[in-house]
Length: 261
Image (cartoon, one colour):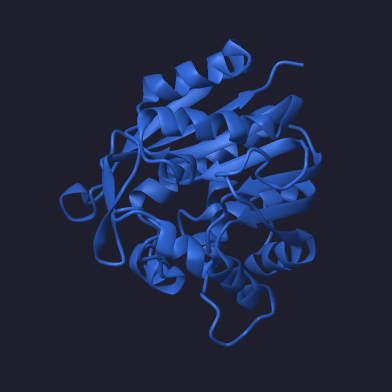
């Protein structure tokens, strides 16, 4: 990973990446922020609408976070979480092992407006959800700069990707190229859940601006249609950023769609 950091151009998100600092800066809250609460509700509605249990799911470019996994895991028998950065995966391992220094996800999972709250009281207790996560999560390496991000031709009936594709190659064409790789991992008839920053050109990461592709709601809808997702199943929504003057984040887009059989 050292070589990857060194090779990343100035302004790329990996150039000064610090997994724990990212968690502290963006998720070290005592309450669930408005944008995360809106995302939890959107994803919960989407999963209920799909209404399907999956043998496996891929969380692609998972980073060091676990609140997305907490939403998906009741619907899957196995959740493969994949990332290019070993320090991100190590943060997840610490939590799975119950290490004393592991990041505490109880606010985002179990507090008011968190994951369980978005499920309207149908999701059990925090302890039950955490136990489910620890039993079903498997960790993998991935690289979205490669033609086969997982190193082999594989597809999943459910793929999720949160705040990932717009950062890999931070240009419009780079995002479209990355999206072709992301969607190639979705099996025919399978589902994709996608979340990212909306109408945003950079975000402050570890105290420095990191560039990203400027993705819009219309752009998400268009690219999913172009990449073989059934138009009638494409759902896209946007929620505003909370502190755009400080973080650079103008908003969040949230989407899900079914790939054509």
